[in-house]
Image (cartoon, rainbow, N blue to C red; front, top):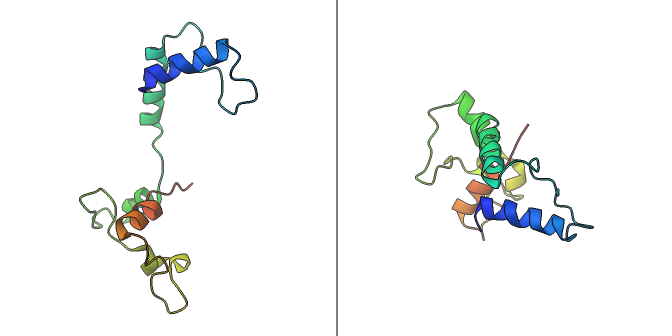
Length: 111
């Protein structure tokens, strides 16, 4: 389901009373806005308000840090974060794929 279809269906759910006791905010855009306008507005806001991640914060200080082909910093969390080290000082998530751990760690949102 694309974003425009999502907005249409969400509004339909609201009209049918299916939004009762749901956590989804029922008023997506003003009633006079077309779904296309709502999506464009959200896209514009997202562009103007990018998420700040651990990676973007580190890149502000070290813009030449090594980034992999997948767009994620190639600095292993266990090297800089005690929460990712075991009692011996080694990686505590050995059973996970390094690429998954890197993405999860560096893409975490920060303030």
